[in-house]
Image 1: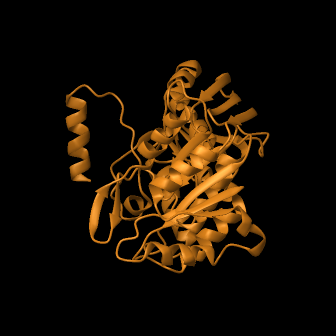
Image 2: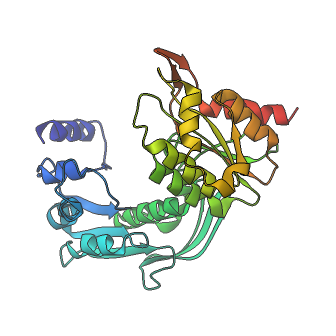
Length: 341
């Protein structure tokens, strides 16, 4: 707490008027956020995580609820995305002071939500939504892809409104939000037509399934997935990764990730062991990741969507004990450029 207060004091001395923080459940449980009182707080999602620290999911949620119960100002604003985890969102909002504003954000499952997406459309270029808010209607445009990103944007909008920022100013600011590097990050080359290409860090079966679920509504043609598994890591997830990719995609390129000291062919063998028999005809095998990315993009149609998963923001690949430069985004951009020649 002392270090954080020193940083905030330093920022204030340099002219900062607002501070935006992500407060972890660990920090809340350990009392490290103890002196802080927020004007606005938000909950974007809640899923199984950090159970090596928290006793169970109830304990994990209780820690998150301390943000509203102990750290929100009496006249503050609490915002929570309710569609994916309504019970968690309800508890988070219920813990807020009685005098606080409590706003639910919904894509449509909760028609009574204070922030409601009355219309919502996804395309490979991003999302568009018409929102009903406590400050009036808002037309939202964003380059981000996926329904979960609309949840994030609606919560961010609510936090801004809670701070007194005008709805149009918030909408314009959110239009510029590009998201975290390597998280459903779009790769495009000016003047070149081709499939939509997204790069994502998803490297567990659940994360890959969620990434596929997120991009599927934006896909106008076929969904092509390029995916590998890391070597010298948990081998039990490899068949699960293969199963998830082959089940969710229209075409699946099984390739390498960071093979490290394992044989890349053996890793792919384990991935393909999980592919259902009736999905094996959609699989292409190519252990050279650069070639797999290039081939997937070269063979895709303009209305297809190519999801390159597993490495995201990473700019390296580990072959044996050697780390080389490798960036999925760079390889995807080169492949798109070749289509335009």
